[in-house]
Image 1 (tube, rainbow, N blue to C red):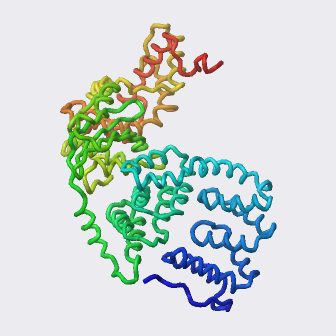
Image 2: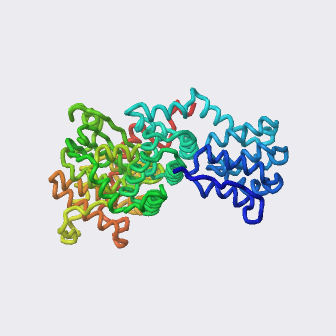
Length: 531
């Protein structure tokens, strides 16, 4: 049975305009017809002066159903003064949805007041391109409902948009009916690592809908799988309160049901690369799930988490997953294939590091390629039970050199390194190689002004490579990397004389000298750029 608005509205002290406006927020279950009836009664029965006072007090938040009501009240009683107040309120809300923003801009333009707000003129031009370019939002909504690949393509497109604009697009999409395709799109965005994007998706799913059945599955998934306790609590509240006639949802039961319907998955192929000099590597997975095969390549950064992901869906066999062959052909990094435990452990640790720059497509491809119940966890400790302290310190120079020889692109290419390399060459002669004893001052200066700030990066890189080499069966390198990583996390080893920093400084300075002899100097712009 549809909830009904009150049969009568009065302007008594018990039913003030403020309370009546608040009712729109308090009754999200009202249909559009019921909200229209409530608004008509409100305008008819409440004196205009009292109604406008209440609307003015709420101009600071024009989003949601209440914001729509406030706009309609202002439109019904528009004066230049009132519209100027509305324009100022809109300037202060840069993240309002495109549709709501456009409504306000249209009111101001119709009253010939838009020219008084230069900020809004610029925003209107952006919105015109966003909203009117072949009906982009409408087309996107249609794509989500009608195209099997619409979801991940839409997520990919959203990732190309500036993060500040994404909440506006999400709120704009939610102005229309939320069908199963759009609901799934919003569900995936509820896992986004960008807080405004995630919040916009949650708000969109929480908006009143005449048909909530397909939303139940979406909220159940969020309640069962989301890593954020606050988001889980919000999902539980929605499930518990979606209908007065239904009993409160038992969350463990929801979790069990969600887990039960998840399709089993099996990893058909995996590939993990070593790390480049920036601390980036790639993990590729091809997985059967629910009878279909999907593959995805996750570009991981040891400080930023997953920074890019591309995928292929509906494959017939692992041989069709061209991501593997492309990576093998294009990379010069060491590769470990078909050790899924390594891929899952490193990807889990990378997901835990994700932040606002993480692409919105991540959750889609995680669900397509990871086993059910996957959780982001810290990077695992390689070689469990082995104590790195058993290695003698006098072994570390050889071990540090072996690790760096196995990772030839681990170099420092900073301008400071080139300045010091140039200085050594000028002082000692063009053929003189960097020497940690003779050039101790240069080594110390490079460490204090550059490498000391990079130790955490290299520590994480060493941990990744320790797990990588363990999986590859290269115990000497893996244990060397683990021991070095542990030492770099200890203040007593954070010194310019540590074997790892000495070896890294030497090879970085030597490489800089070699490049300078060949005329390669990253401090100088190419002539084409200078021109």
